[in-house]
Length: 145
Image 1: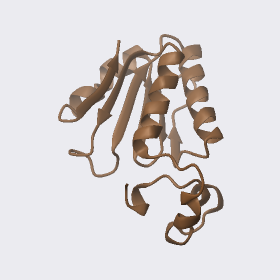
Image 2 (image 1 turned 90 degrees about the vertical axis):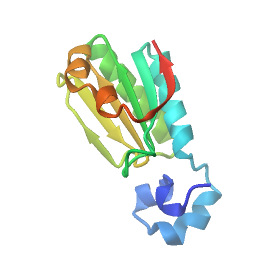
Image 3 (image 1 turned 45 degrees about the horizontal axis):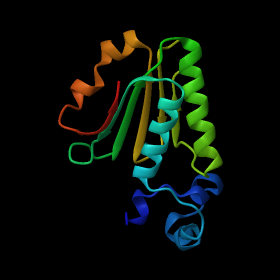
């Protein structure tokens, strides 16, 4: 079980409450562990036909996250479909991103869920930024070609 400050707490994200005070109440709700969030997002990306889906365990080499999900879409429309489905499904499970970056046409969309960071790339941007090379010390959990 992760300490309270490493969990994604739907109550604190929605209402802005103090995690320490609401933590016990949140345990009664469906709190997803970071690994569950990462796995669910990976499944969604795969279902939406994302290409080269990679889930990395970055805990040993990163101080701000536990997992990176990196995937690509072949078109702007596909990038948007992957992005929207991940955001909507996690929202339905009570998990909201702490931060989102990227705009239509940028070729890189990012959703930061605290312990899980999701990167959705167009092929050219993925090749340019080479996140897998940057985080080469990370442990690959899953790769779907």
